[in-house]
Amino acid sequence: MPSTTKTLEDPGPIATAPEPDHAPLLEAFDRLASDVCLDVKKVSAVLSISVSTLNDWRLRGFPPPWVKANGRVIYRAGALRDWLHECETQEPTGTTTQRRRDELEALPIPQRSRHASFAAFTTHGSTTDTWPFLLSEPTGRPLDAVEALANEEIEGPVEWMTLEQYSEAWKKAVTLIYVQEDKVLLPGRPEEEGDPEKPKRIL
View 1 (cartoon, one colour):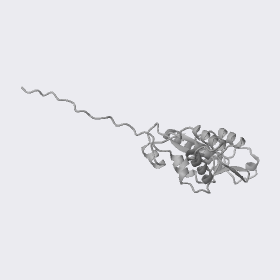
View 2 (cartoon, helix red, strand yellow):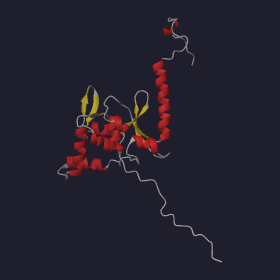
View 3 (spheres, helix red, strand yellow):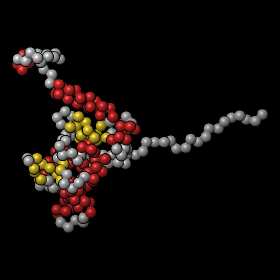
View 4 (tube, helix red, strand yellow):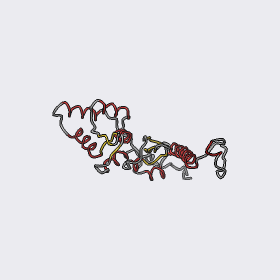
């Protein structure tokens, strides 16, 4: 009687998640117009260094180049790109150029993502995937940092978040926005007592 034993076929290599190969903030920065102005928090996110380190470089007279406008420290995208390009390509010809190269080499590797866009992250992101979000001041509403990078009116720190962290940050921001826009008044405040038309709310 012939054997009916079945052999298991080799399933081949097990599929694994692709390695992070996108640097969304750097890619967005490369697309910015030269005259776009970035604040300290955005530049720290692009260069993957802390705000305090960037401030220390500025106070010590180190690049990247910056200007002051209306009392604010800003970095023009074109000048910042030129500095990065110079550090990467020019051969040291003096202490200044060598110092710039040393500073660039000291920068950490930019944080990367498996996803090329915010839409791809929200649609296909796993529980451990992250994406950069700008926490818009003053409410902390999380915005896609790639889109917010070019908007000079939006300010706030940039944080890399998972989908769960993004959802929690959004909920907190919505609550704060609701309180601010609804102007919830506690009983007994003078402006409430003098206005009989204004309903009293108890928290």
